[in-house]
Length: 365
Ligand code: UD1
Image (tube, rainbow, N blue to C red; front, side):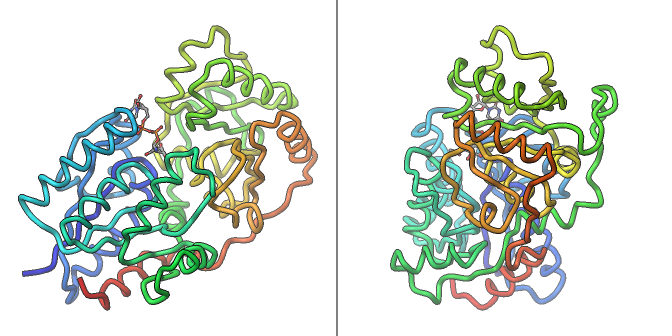
């Protein structure tokens, strides 16, 4: 019997990170590979444009299991995933549970697996923002406190783990599977149908995405952010790609400035077309700051901290928090062509998943 690896995913960024690993596992399966895998979708994201379309565009096989937990409070969503995943493991136990990133699905699956004496591998382990007001930072810390095998995207992440007492022989600096997926697909990026009808021109629009509760849950704050961006846009059109969470708040804002064109959450190939061709991206996403760095697109992150400091130190990203002045100054700099160019961080070379599989073959679980 082949050992069974669970690949647990639940949200949009998980699908992007897992895609590269799944493709590599498929390649390995054609040889003398000693593992089988099962894709477990928790159902944390369930809208077509946050979930199904990512599977189809990235060529990921249908999940073997969908736990269909849906939305809920932090505790309810995490607890629902735990109960459902535990039931699955009661039916059929796996030998290794692979989790990705920092979402509720990540921590929930890791906790369940570990208590059932299943080894846990964490991809994108060790990154830290040191801001525990965000659920993702708590998810990172808790997941890494029980992970057996740590796969990191940067040397800094490996250092963070070793400094927290993790034995060095369980930490593997492999690079970034989200960038594997980006580099594999860059030639397939595809212009969304609305691009021409909205009269967007390459490098002549501001791309905006916001979904963090701190930015989008309060309509007054969100309206203020939108007004500031509009005022500093210098007449350049703003394309706002709206996450469903943000849509709830937008619906309660009476007037969104007309210079801001809003579209629904975009499929992977379309979103990355928009990112690659943007004059600047303004976002509160960590993943987008990594992709912008590799695509050499100026990026302004509306957060006060980042778990991905290399995107600032080496890349095209700057943190502007919710400081209006900082946002305006940065936009002026970008408009006048004075932005830094990005250096691609070490091992963000499209081969992280390959390295992970080679290491998995040597591990005992
Ligand atoms: C989650 C992750 C966040 C990640 C983001 C990417 C956590 C704690 N947060 O945030 O780190 O950056 O995914 O998108 O895990 N909703 C829908 N349809 C869906 C999913 C969600 O309409 O398919 C709406 C619901 O109103 C839901 C809200 O979005 O209540 C929040 O969804 P949730 O998955 O809890 O968190 P995200 O904000 O998406």
